[in-house]
Amino acid sequence: MCGIVGFAFRDSFEIKDSVKALKRLEYRGYDSFGYADNNGVVGKHVGEIAIDKVPALNTKIAITHTRWSTHGGVTEMNAHPHTDCSGKIAIVHNGIISNYREIREEMEKAGHAFKSQTDSEAIAHFFENKNIKDAAPEFFSKFQGEFAVLLVKKAEEKIYAFKRGSPLVLGIAPEGNILASDIYAFSDRTNRAVFFNEDEFAEITSEGFTFYSITDTTIPIEKEITVFSWKEGEELGEYPHYMIKEIKEIPRAASRLLLSLGGEQKPAVEKVVRMLKDAKRVIFVASGSSYHAALIGVQFLARAGMEARAVVASEFRSFMLLDENTVAVAVSQSGETMDVIEAMRGIKAKGVKIASLVNVPYSTVQRMSNAHLNIGAGQEVCVAATKTFINQVITMAYMASMLGYRADFASLNDCITKALLQEERIKEIAAELKDERDIYILGRGVCYPVAREIALKLKEIAYVHAEGMMAGELKHGTLALIEKGTPVICLMPKNDKDIVSSAEEVKARGAKVISFTSNGYDSEEGVKINATDAATFAIASAIVGQILTYYIAMGKGLPIDKPRNLAKSVTVK
Ligand code: M6R
Image 1 (spheres, protein in one colour):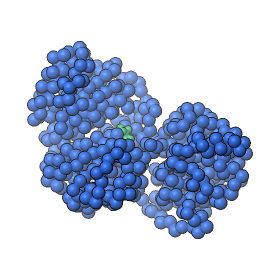
Image 2 (cartoon, helix red, strand yellow):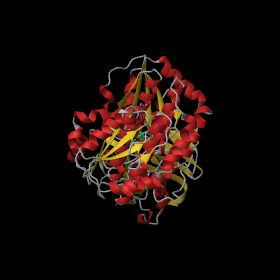
Image 3 (cartoon, protein in one colour):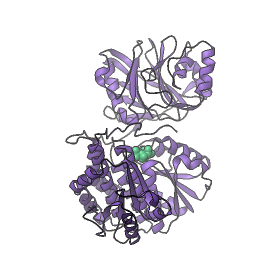
Image 4 (cartoon, helix red, strand yellow):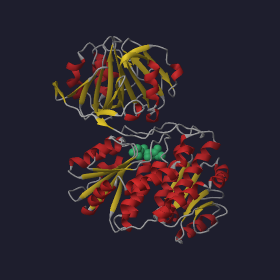
């Protein structure tokens, strides 16, 4: 993870300004931050980005970094930028150098003094006393793993940029050039960008940029300028947290998506659907909430008579069934999840076509795909996927509907609005559950992935140990954990009789059953879900689970938008 930003401007600016741009990437990591310029200034701080900690200094060249630690604890010393022994070179790095131990050992033997426990510091020492451009090819061959690196050298009016694996993009702004992990760092200043491809190296000044492929650093390569459009995330406004703001945006995001799938995205939808139709095997690949959306997609496609599977991206390596009759569908909000990208690399290497569902346009996943759909939820700031998960599910239902699945899109907005109107009832339940250590969520069919999704929300945001289960599996073991007062949320759509038996089974053993219900079961103990079919039930109950999580976390006074140890965009393996 981690976010990096570099400014090369014609006129001098305050270092604080570049740190403000970095703040826009804070969802990529927030345990420490730092900055350096080409005058030898280096500052590092533990904790979230605090602009007031940055000194009032001016410069024309600066690099900055917000960290999600991988190697070395959260300390000031381990925060980036890292410098070489002479202090003339400063670097920021996003990614992981997998062979850093060997490199560090070799450099220490050669007399370099390391100050941190990170994998990144070796990069600064490697370039010590070297001409950066001349040494770039050796850097790419010596350093293994993933990296997006920005480097400044004292007294040089440029930033050197290196990209392998981790995302890196150049923004062409009126003030000069901006390097960043993603477009959001500069989308308030410019909509013109140049995306780095793998194994590219660039020299960036305030006046221009020169890119090289690492196979030949003597001849610059042509780069295309992309003009992008990206809806800015609005300010928090009246809301105390982005999580609740983003949940409340669901009706708008969902309607916008449906309009766009039937409108400007129609040709893309038709292309993706054709790919699915022509395939013998459909494999979804995703992580976290996106994986849960993919599991729901599998069920929708099954109802349309199409066999599909969902594989967790980090486990994809062991998935062998890929051939020319397979289509892979990558699902990722950020489009930068390293596990997904790694899986896609393997898939592409086998010549398999990839369609993708992404939220952040121009992301790596999108650019690696043969066809893509944009879930159009707008920027999501809170680490928890809320509106983006819902829009992923809607997109899945939409694709399946083009293949014969009947989803009640006409009632969707009404179901969503009614779920949001349950807020007061959900708050009461949240107050009852606030001190629970374990919560079980039971669902069947389409509700099973929803149960897992609610459990994931409860774990990451409310710090509750939660387990989302297939209701039918309960009696095969987990039932042993149910005792007097154990909270069990049951997802109860209208026509599911068996979930009623599961609820009765846990109740008989003393569980406190909370039903999210369309069938009237114990509705006074739970939350009524207004749903007309499986898709609308899945969506409405997921929203109720999101609101419940939010209020449990509120009750516990937790840092809702930035939960401990996590980052929104997981750009490391
Ligand atoms: O950006 P992606 O959709 O690829 O992210 C995948 C997961 O990291 C993400 O869904 C994560 O599980 C969320 N924080 C869940 O709320």
